Image (cartoon, rainbow, N blue to C red; front, side):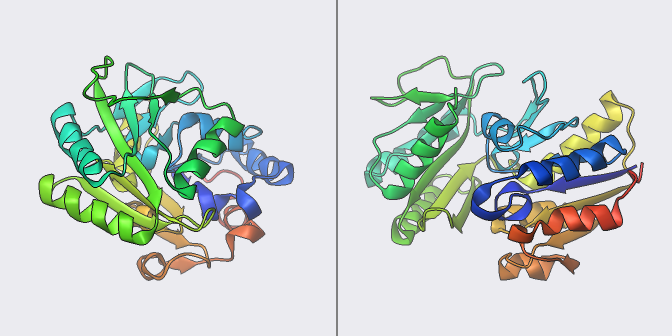
Length: 286
C-alpha cells in the first residue's frame, strides 16, 4: 500500500487556515476510495478535530511535531516521545531565568494538559485565543510553575513560546547550552507575524513519528506500506520529508523545504495537495 502524510498549516489547509467543506468532500472521496492518508502537524488532537471536522480520518495522526502518535477516534495515545521531567525542569529554568515563561505541554495518561503562562507577547496571546475559539480542553491556567508544583505530570512533551525573533534566539541559545540534546525548532508564525520556538525531546520530530506510524500500521493493523509520500512547507517538516520515499513541497514553502523536496507543487491556498492526491493517488493506490 501507499501512505500519504500531510502537514496542516500552509500545506493542506487553505487560505486563512481553513479547510473548506468542498476540500473535505474531495478528501473524503479519496479516503473512501482507498486512499491511506493522515496528517503530521505541530497542532494537537483537539485542533485537528476542529479544523478537519468534516474529514473522515481513519489512520492515527501525528501531533505536536511528532511528540504524539494518537488514535484520533478513541483519543488513545499510541506512542509518545517526551523530554523527561529532569530535562524539562532544566529547560523550564531557562525560560524562567530569561523572564519569558512558555506554554508547557504535559502528559497525564491519554491527557495532554497545556499549562498557560502569563501572556507577554501578541504571539502568546494569539496562541491562547485560537485555542479558546475551539474550546481546547487542554488549556490549564497556571499561576505557578506546573513542573515544580508537581501536578501529577508523567512527562513533558514540549515547550512553546511565540515572540520577536531576538527573544526566540535568546531562548534557543540558553536551552542549547543547558540541554544540548533537546530538539529546538524555530520558524516564523505567519498567522501572527511573530516567531515561534518549540522545544521537545530529540526524537520528537515528524520524521521519527512517520517511522513509528509505519511500525504501528504493520504490527497492529497488518498494513504494509511500500511507498510513503509527505507534504510540507516549513522547517519542522524537514525530518519528515527526509524520511519518506516521495517528498513534496508546496510552492509557498521555505527554501530549505523546496531544496529537500523531490517535487514542488502549487500554492497551499489553491488546494495544491488535494490536486496532487487526485492526480497521483486516485482510486486508493492500496
